[in-house]
Amino acid sequence: MKIILKIVMIVSLISICAPCWADIYKYEDENGVVYFENHTRDPRFKLYLQDKTEEEKGSPDTPAVTIPPSFNNNYDALIFEVSKKYEVDSALIKAIIRAESGFNPIAVSRKGARGLMQLMPETASRVNVSNPFNPRENIEGGVRYFKYLLSLFNNDVKLSLAAYNAGEDIVSKLGGIPPYRETINYILRVLYFYQLNNRQ
Image 1 (cartoon, rainbow, N blue to C red):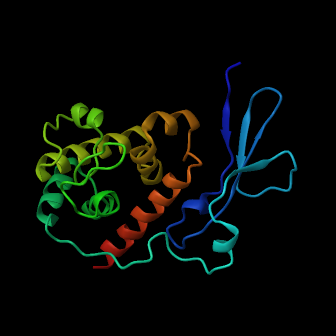
Image 2 (cartoon, rainbow, N blue to C red):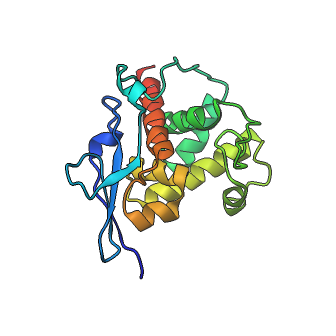
């Protein structure tokens, strides 16, 4: 039977005003419909994703990133140039780069994402990036791809960030942000850095 997914999540999970934590609970009914909630008293829902351990829950909430960001300005001119070309907020692109690679142009993730904007090989190929370790090529490709995501998700920044992290297919399928701790924290990180960039 084809499983239909329904997400019931509170927008405050991804609030930029204050970081927040929430466990995610899952319930699948007899028709194969899957429900997610971030708080419930319904015993049919079982813990699906724990955002904090019991020990962490005893400590005060802190931002997704507690260390002060390093205000790396090495790529500002390039970021501004490419962002202007694709009509994307340069402060947001800088925040993505900070969250993705920490401004390391030769960064490689465990999954194989490369360069400043951590482009996967298939994404790099899709946006005509032949050398993902070249800062200009990487930023050009990353901004071009993020602009595409913004267009795909009606300029919804949070959904576009979720798609950049988790993949556009899963975000399109769910019609919302996937209930993955990594993706939720990623969005919080980027928006946190974005806020800081706008204060400069």
